[in-house]
Length: 232
Image 1 (cartoon, one colour):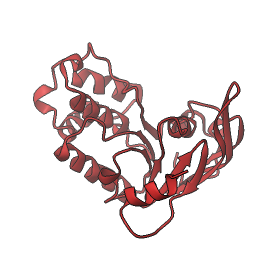
Image 2: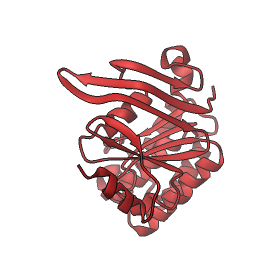
Image 3: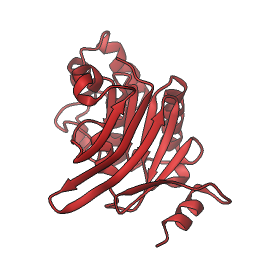
Image 4: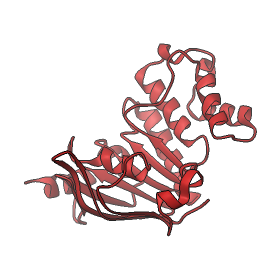
């Protein structure tokens, strides 16, 4: 299954009496990297969870191309890659075993080759047979990124992907995301590392108190524009 856009229309999400999202409308197209910016607690992770089909909306509509999550079912979910705050890695397993588990979960062809390629992308070939519990935060982050991309998703949802990465690893991730865009993937990224994402971002939105608005154009860096618009 394929789709050319992700569209949220008037999406709201409540947790009891707390409103995490309120009337959010967003369109991200194939071949586009969109940054979702905002303070902690603004609703960014909730938005990604809804896009990943992990949360239902309280109201509004979410479409993948012209398809809803209910209509797309397993075929749709198999085209989504998610990196969340939980890295979804098993610490007692090795890097190879973690990736092989997810390759089997997605029933990927040539799993050994895919795992080897992913380990190379993460620069973890030398630690392939070491348990993830022995990895640094940055190493786990690199492995988790490859875990999220192993099945070549068409919709890539990344929650703070630059966390724990050094400069070289950040540059590698930017190159990786640019390649995904070149292949027509839709990429949504939440991040506080604005300098890290700025060179490759196509559009940026500000999420504040559950409401989303485009980041306005203007002079200065991405961080400068974010600070101006985020001021109360």
